[in-house]
Amino acid sequence: MLARTHLAFALGIATLPLYALSLVDKATLQGVEVSLYLSGVALGSLLPDIDEPNSTLGRQLPLLSSLFHRLFGHRGATHSFLFPFGVALPGWGIASSQGIALEAVIGLWLGVWLHLIGDMLTKSGIPLWLPWSERPIALLPLSYRFKTGGIIDLALGGIFGALFAYLGLNLWGSSLSITRFL
Ligand SMILES: [Zn+2]
Image: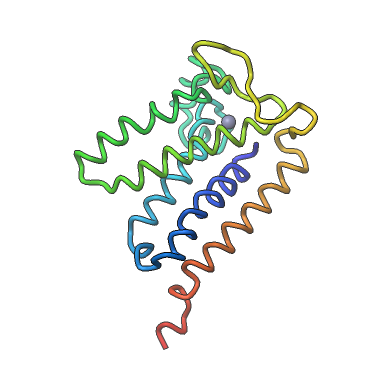
């Protein structure tokens, strides 16, 4: 799955609980916590591909990315079910001790999981049960899975990008509107 599809897929899905919450109580969705949550989701959705120096995040952090690539290869340890916990547990400790909103860590954890789920829809799957098994795991039979960078990958990016835009406009459109200031 391409980085932009991962981002759109994760943000589109992660905004659904916010939308559901807004139907109950819109006031809870104001403030910096929502931004931190969505920033965490965005970072988490790209983080597992730190093991690929040519990935979006890998190009930003070339030294770290090369190190991960050398240690684990692409779609290795950072695509194991242990990785979301390996990221979130230290994140939780840092956030608690530094007084950072835990919403950012929840977003990060969810974003990483949504990346793994996205990759499990592609042809090659991921070694989810590392270090116990290297067998690639996928969510669908091979014929229903798509190739990274193919037309379905691009289409999913568009669909989930549109979903995120739609939910975002419904949630925050009125508060962003210029009419609020007139
Ligand atoms: Zn990946």
